[in-house]
Image (cartoon, rainbow, N blue to C red; front, top):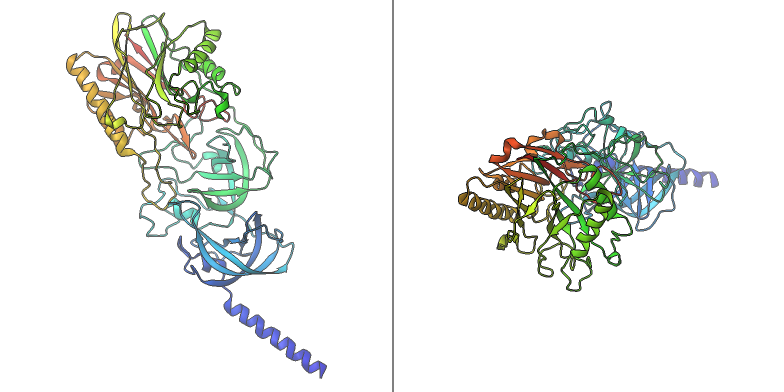
Length: 569
């Protein structure tokens, strides 16, 4: 009787196994050949090897490839709290398929909300990582998306390429940094030391083009708690070797989550020094966004304690060679972001001037028209504005020439500051600008394709106003020599700057080779948003440089690089 009962129990167990097999849904089937799972909101049972664990779940992957590049073999299993499993465990999981959206306008992450879990075995080898690089899967180098997410094509669209690897182990071959490590533990990189990369500059940054926003850049998300040995000063051009992690998506970007240590071979990149020095008959003018500079260390940013004034002063003297005039953006009032009604910024200017004078024995003077309290954007209470430093031993400020361009187009943002100077008996007009920010822009790898260029219409109206102002100057005097400069928060090929340029100006950014143009790095994309324009009567009398001293390095005093022009008068 016991023998018959044993046979019956084994038979029942086999039937149970068969039932599980019939209901089993492989991970590639759950992921599907699309951004949205074909099993959305359905209960499924699947199995795989645990490849990574975090605070609210774990990654699960098929041990063997299905040899279909269109489907991912990994998935994130959401458990609400850290699971009592280990990497290398083979598990059966049952749960509901969902699409988790990290942030509004982001893509979603196919996720399995766990109901039950069984461990089949432990200490299994991890599935082989997919190689990303010239000897493996090659990411597209030009197109992020060209079909509004209607066609799933990983070979052509970068947004589909990374989706096809979502949740999987990947290895980036010969990884090179194209951005510095930021405070969030993020680095943007390219494979193969950039050998197969379009738009790489001579300094190893990856520069955008009008129709190319570089889908080949890959974000690394470092787990700072597990990677305490990683240098905190990773910069552009540093070599990181072969990096293995999990392909994920968060806050508008695909990212490779890294929890294992790696070594860094530092590049020899150093801050640039301009070749444009002030000379007897040659005037130098720079533009520099100094990133919310103020003297109040009680408002959180601690510019004095961190040495921001000393560093910027050193850059002005040693890297920019003490320009005759410096157009500054993001000067904050004396109390910084403390919202107390103070709008004057004389202490901010004078502190910087003092630091410069100790290095160069030049006593710059400043020009400023304070904004009305909380009417020009930026941090509440900080009253950022544009202003000038100038060397009175080299240039003469023309009395009563300082004015603002105050128009409805500049509501809630910085007003351009117009100032006239004399140099060697000749008059020049400067217009210092800080156009509306790109706030409201959507992610390059977001649900909106093509991405939205935030506040572009506001910048377009501002460009028209400044262009009309210059036209008035030229109508009054056709020999007017005008220089328009600052932080325009837009690219040379976009409509606002095309309108600003019109038929009157030359954008000196366009005198630099396209793959060498940048004053800012955002999410690994090197781009120019700081520009200098001159009227056409100055076109053949100028030399222009972008001086890369901040954007490529960690712990810089600003997230912008300055630009400088030398004018032969």
